[in-house]
Length: 338
Image (cartoon, rainbow, N blue to C red; front, side, top):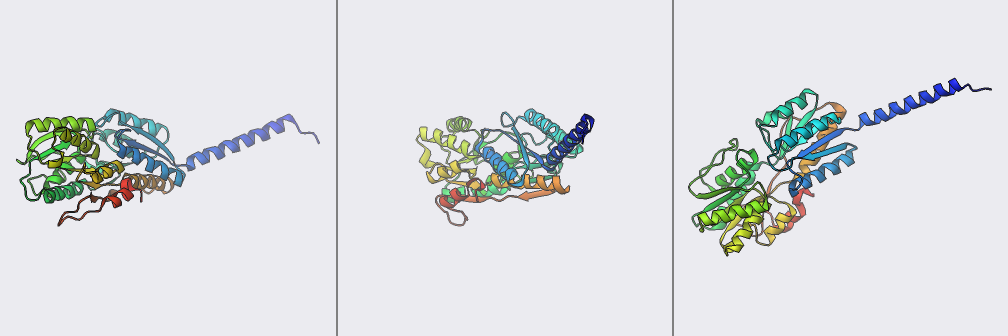
């Protein structure tokens, strides 16, 4: 029997087409999910990326990651969204640097059939994205406010706040929640403005950074050396504040409270750097986001509304009337490991 070259070529071509089709089918079957964080240096977002990566591997999804250059970098996040959509992402998980400025990019993504989920930080309006998986940041603030008041033991509060930066929803919710928890004049959870009752003698923007937190605390001490309570947007800022207070010989006279509950932050609670912190769970947020993206890719089902990913107060020294967990529990749970 003679096999003609043309027959062989046709068969080879057919096999090549089948192989290509199989390859394309596999590629289409693998969901592509993008994760865009505020920065790639903050430990909170490093852990969020780890959580997303682990869940993507578990569920057979392809994960694309990017971040802004700094807190507040909206342009970098917009570019990342566009690049991810071009690369085939059908779900984008986003921690928005600018709650309002990101909205046009979100709408463009949704118009192309991409599901957009905000993690950790809401957009403004919240309804602009398909869903929000986040800590109740106002509640996180309330918890540390309640603790600080009880820890101060009836003394008149002289408060410094080391905030994120003006206009950011998460920064406002934590700040205003803290004041409400302390029982001071505040604003509600929907406001992006920062309340400033008379008891707050100094406010500084830390951008969630240790060095900026230290500088902010130094400046506040110059304005009012009698500060006895320090609220911080996160634990790096708290660590910076402690350095400034220690240099001034005042670290034992001040109650520092914070938010995040990262492993390094919980160690600082145990070491007496931070009195108490509200612990949130970025690994959980990220895993939930990836799982939702896989579900959307495979069934077309979108998420909707807000999902609370939990918050707990961690303190080395419990105080009367305020529920908290100890440092050991905080270390077991830090970043949402369990």
